[in-house]
Image (cartoon, rainbow over all chains, first blue to last red; front, side):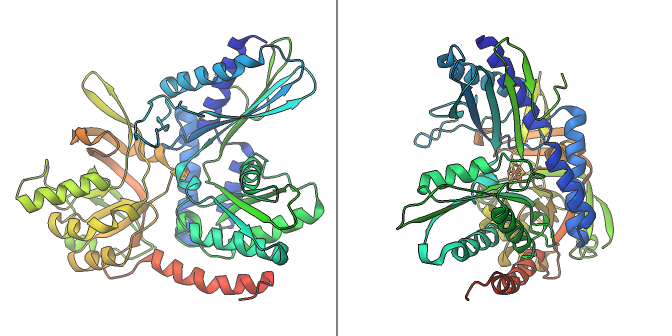
Length: 293
Length: 201
Ligand code: SF4
């Protein structure tokens, strides 16, 4: 696979993600606007919708915090030059930072120096997955700081089971309050281990909002948590109202008998994600957004 | 809920007309200041040094904008609000000393700031978090960039704005604070939610 194609595709999905919100998120925001009863909450949702339209019109990033850049790469076992993919992604990030532009958000935690181009140790972070076939599928998520700061992991009491999980999530939403720019999307995961739960929770944020869980029991739990979170009254931007979350996604791994790891990952209304698939012949299929340039 | 459109400098009398849940649009001059600019401004005041401009009647904006420079002309590309709680430790003194009438940010501020707003006549206008383009489009001109040694996000940006908003008046000059009210309400709702989910309290 030609590295140049990988680089261009990575650049394109990154640019798409920061400018155009996914259709499912836009629809959920419109629905929330129609259903919000708090007047002040409504003004916030209106401002969000106006801002989304302006970002599209001017092809500018929808929020000034263009986030930490995370890639999910699903590589077919027959894809050639897989060792070059990381370099291509890094080049794409540097180019996007300059040309879109993106805010430089990669800081050395010890020297406090900002690299200026959104790259640095482990950043952009790449999650790898091997599949069979000859396609290379890439998804990018850019994750804002405000919603990242309230993500939470915990080791629950196994004996409390799902009830303990519900409390953990409700408490996390309440503690987060206005900070993650609500309405938010919740990615929830249990099992595996501390790291696995958080990674799985974050990955759950990639699922479209209009796709309920394939497992009917989990779909029920998602709905229950969705309703509970919206009963808090936190509302858009924490100004009060019935729209606190736009959606809930739950995923899990099997757990150790003695542990019940749980994680809640928050994404703000400015949910930025986009995907594309590169075929062996070099043709590119954009999966979430139509290419607009 | 009433909608107000004010031009800077805003008088104390005008600002006292606002009540929580009103919507405000500001035209005129707004100045960005984050933690470091707040600290420096207060230090200057103590030392009797003048600020780069007189803030009386203006709006202070908690914001680290994305800016670009062509020749020697700056422009604001994206300028959404940052979380205001970090400035809570400075804001009462800031309002008292500089007589700013509007504080713009996201996430709200606490009791101390609320009291200062009641005492000296100022309001907190919540600007929608993340609505960076909406904000940038209301900024018609970057009149000045001061204290650039603090770094561009922390610098004091002087913006000329037209109908900057909507700002949800979340703290008024009469001691009302929506965020504190919502927090109380949420605490009460929490018990109902626990009950519904069968969580023992
Ligand atoms: S939390 Fe999200 S919407 Fe809010 S400022 Fe950060 S990135 Fe933007």
